[in-house]
Length: 132
Image (cartoon, rainbow, N blue to C red; front, side):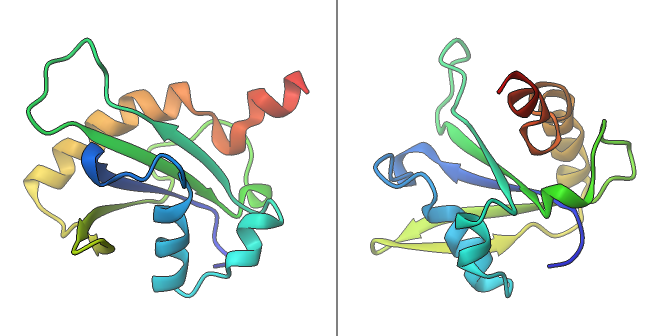
């Protein structure tokens, strides 16, 4: 996991364990060869975007946005900045991770998600670091 990139984990709200908001992040790291200690050591920054209560939704989703290797990049995210999108859901009490396949749906979803994540969630929580 040497490359700085943004990961978006999309999970249905009923499948999210609010007592353990990092569960989907640990799942991603375990399935993709990442080290759980990297999360504890602050190499990655996590933003959690709950569903918008002002928009009626039949199946609301939570977006867990993970900035991997946050110290290897700074500044605004350009159009070519690497992003990966994963579906996370729960089956029989266990979280399952699957990467979205390239498709017209994913292209549209990527554009929609980046419209708010690139602006609202600066890379690695840079605004948070500046305010500290």
